[in-house]
Length: 566
Image (cartoon, rainbow, N blue to C red; front, top):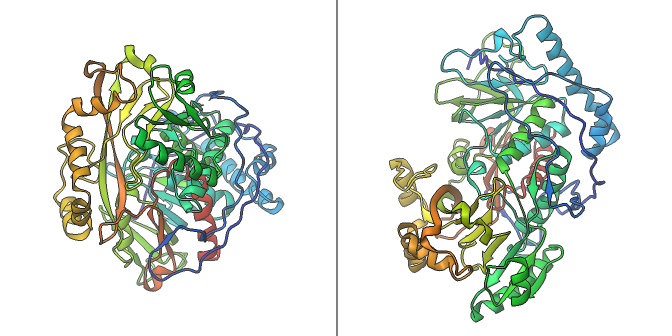
C-alpha cells in the first residue's frame, strides 16, 4: 500500500487490579489435518493455558473506573507509564520470569514514541506525520512503531472480539514481534460483537466434552476476571431457564444434568415458589437457576482488548477491506527486508500489507477470506438475522434477570428470551430468520452476491426442507408482533402488545455444510501450498464466542505458536 500514514493513538496505562492466581489446564492436541477440522468431542486440539477461576467474590456489579475508549482525532489521553508496574502486570497476566523480562520491550518502545512527540507533535498526541491522506486507511499505531509501517511478523484479519482478543494474546506472549490487525470498517467491533445480546453465558447448553462447552465455562470465568481487573462494568444478574409446559420438564432435567457435566457452578432445579422469589412476574412449572450468568457490553470489552494490544506495541489498521492474500513473487523494490515478509495482503483499493504469518478471524466473511488462500470452500457461512423487541421503560419492572425458554435441541438458537441490558433496557427475542445480506440488519437489506452464494453454494435448501415448519413459524413471528407477544406471555402474562417496541437486530454467522447440517463447533483450517504453512483460518467461531473470547484467544495463540514455530 506504499505509505500507509495514519492516526497515532495515545493511551494511558493504569495499574491493573489484582486478580486471582491462574490455574493451568492442558489438553491433548490433534495432529494438523490437510482439510478443515471441526474440533469437538473428547479430544481437544490445542493446549488451553492459564485459565483462571471465577473472580467475582459474590459481587454482582463492578464499575470502578470509566471504560477504555477510542480517542477522537485531535484529542488524545496524556501518556503515563510506570516501568515498575511491568513486573506486576506480567505476574497478573500469568507470564513466566523470562516472559516478564520481555514485557519491558513494548514499554521501552512506548517511551520511544513519547520522546518522538516531544520533538514535534500536536497537542493531544497526534504527530503531523500521522494525519492520513484523503481516502487512506487510518493506522492506529502504538508502541513506537512508525505510522508508515506496512510490514509485520503476524497479521490478524478481523477487528471483532475474537480477532482483538487473539491479537492481544499473541503480543503479550511475543512482545518482540510486530503484530498488526486489519479491519475493513472504520471502527472496531461493530458487527457481531456490537450487535449481540451481551450475555455472559455459563456453558450449560453445549454437548459435554465439546470445545464449545469447555471454552464457554473457562471463558466466562476469564471475562469476569478481566472486567474486575480493568474496572469494566457488568451485572451478574443470573438466568432462569423456565419450563412452562409439562412436556418440557424432561428436557429441562436433561439440560440440568448436562450443565453439571460441563462444570457449571451452583446450578439449581427450582419449583414454582422459588421462580416467583427470583422473578415475581414469571410463571413456570420448573426452572434451572444459573446464578453466574451475567451481562456486559462486549463492544466495550473488545475495545479494551484493542487498547491492551496497542499499549503492548501492536498496530490497528482500519478501512482495510482484504481482497487478496498471496505469496510475493519477488522482493519489493528498495526493500531492506528482502523476502522476510513473503505474504502479501491487498485491499480493495490496491494497497498492500506484507507479513510472515496470517491469522484470520473474519466472522461473517470467514469462508470468503479463507478461500483466498485456496482452502476447501466448506463450511459456508449463512447469515441469520435476529430481530429484538424492546420492553417500554414503564414496564421494565416485569423483568429482573435473564429468562430463557427450554431450548429445542435440534437448533443452535436458544429461542425468544428476556435479556436485561447494561443501559437498563430489556430486550425481548431474538427470532432467527434468513438475512438477505451478510451485514443486513434491516429486513429489506439485500445483496445479490450474498443471496447467490446462499442458494448455490451452501446447503441452505436442504436445511429449509428439513425444517420447513420451524422456518415458517420464525418468519411469521418476524412479521407479526402479536405472534411474538403470545409466546412471551407464556412466561410473563402481564405483557401486552402495547408494552413493546421494535428494537435492534443482529446477524449471526452460521456455518453450514453442503448437506444442510449446522456446524456447531469451532472449525480451523490452513491454506494449500506455500501459503498454507503461513496462515491459520478461524472458519467458525459460533455463539458463545464473545463469552469464550479470552479462552479462544489462548487456544489460537497456542496453535499459532506451534504451527508457525514462533
